[in-house]
Image (cartoon, rainbow, N blue to C red; front, side, top):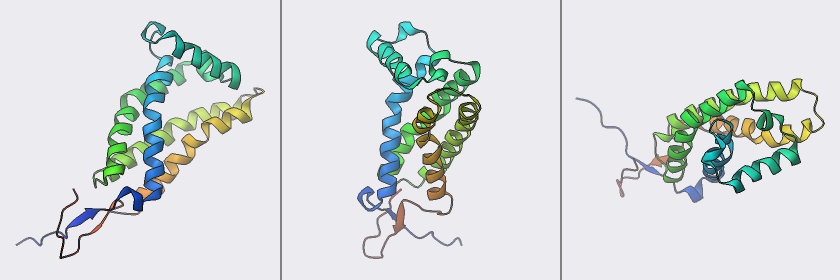
Length: 174
């Protein structure tokens, strides 16, 4: 006879401030991927002029040659973001807020994929001598720090979003 697994309940997001910051980061990045970064791979006719102008303003201000020139490796990374990261941003935002146990696996997938996509971008930024290199490193830095935080948060804990349910409540969280 199989032993029953102990019941768990999700911890409220208010009791998990790191998870709240990570969920906000993911939620903020959904429109960024859809409306800004996707301009690197889709024709401009798919976007309103105001969005195209906003990206051009950003390029002018930051000197972001990757966004301006759209080199093939960058376009490939953006395509990977649309195919892999965007769905994970959506499901992980929900999982982190709602305390879903499956969010550990999808969060690890997201963190590893985001970190991996940032390696060639940082390599290019560090190898290129543009006047705004330090500004660009600062702009892209959160996208290397956040996946490290996500991975450090999720890998060591089998149940990062929940606690054992006490015998009086007996509610399941997932």
